[in-house]
Image (cartoon, rainbow, N blue to C red):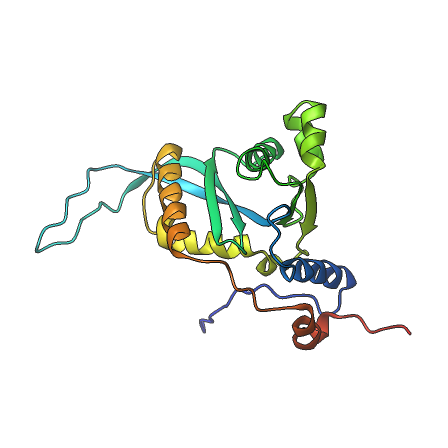
Amino acid sequence: MTSRKLQYWVIPPDSDAEFVANMEEVLETYAKPYDAQHPVICMDEQPVQLTKETRQPIAATQIHPRRVDYEYERAGTASIFMFTEPLSGWREAHARPRRTKVDWAIEVAELLEGRYAECDKITLVSDNLNTHTKGAFYEAFEPERARALVRRIEFCHTPKHGSWLNIAENELSSMTRQCVSGRRIGDIETLQKEIAAWSTDVNSQQRGVDWQMNISDARCKLKSIYPKSKE
């Protein structure tokens, strides 16, 4: 049998008006100048498998690296919520046991009532997951508080199969490689501590994100996904 290599990729549709419309809305959002009273925030989330050591690792010496037993114990899962403000070079990651509508609403509310309490409004870029809804706030909070929060959010959804348009996904990818991947983290408290340290370190070193693609680029380089005009 001949073995074959596969490369997984996010393949956009050949022609899809809805994809194009949402893509251009995201690109137009990224092209706006910085506005401290109406910042653009990107968010994404991902599940993480928690694993515990079954035997005490042996510390590194001058001769041997740190040695870890190949056996491990599954310790449940957690979800990481990533928020980033591209133009200011800020990002923050939180770990929660689940990623329900209520979890999502609580995370967004903490930003609106904390870091962005003085902002008139934020634009929130996220995928169109069924937990990312206005109704989520009404499941989490009393109607008065829910409405006050929703009123301050301008939603901007990436298109289906267009997750590459979400800058928070890039931040999640970097965090996974630099902080989580290849490690055994056995509880959510340790996970939260580690990703918080990662966020603090990157925020102190990295400036804003320099997003290169604009609508003109998309209309040229991704011409195949634009429907033919009927005019």
